[in-house]
Image 1: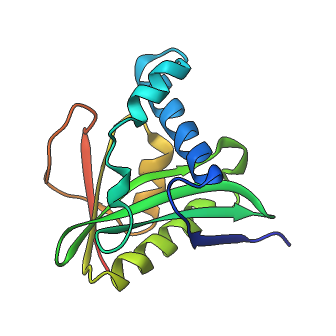
Image 2: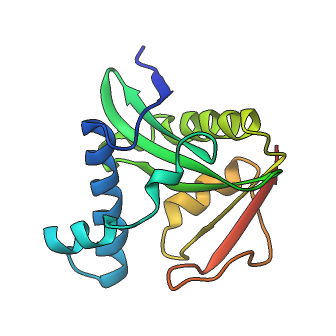
Amino acid sequence: MTIWSVRREHFGSPDATALRRDYYDEVASRYWGRPATEAEVDEGLTGDGVEQLSAPTGEFVVGRYGGAAGACGGVLMLDAGTAELTRVYVRPGFRGCGGGVALLGALEGAAGLLGAKRMVLNTRLDLVEARTLYTRNGYAEIPAYCEGPYMEIWYGKDL
């Protein structure tokens, strides 16, 4: 039986970079209703703040299924007790085999080690798979804690 392995990994590693590109490509393409160009993906990743996803302000993880990089995500400390889930992504070919749950477990554990007592996140309404993952794993809708052009719904969970 193949299982997921989720471990901390530098956001700039080859696998992490490829996953971050795939993440941005998918969310941008879905938002625009057309495939994102390589230039648009590059532009979206430039200055996106991913460097904060390392100690002491956060962590980035990569999930592997049967050794293949299939998922990634990050956690960012917003204050001493609150962490934000960000860049949570499971490649389409790896969906439906437990990667999202494994990813959330690893990220919640990382947030706890960083001192978080609560996890929050924001997403878009069209990202139905992500919203389903969150609600099935104990996240409930909360009032907006931040603003931005791609934020339509907010969730939270006590750790």
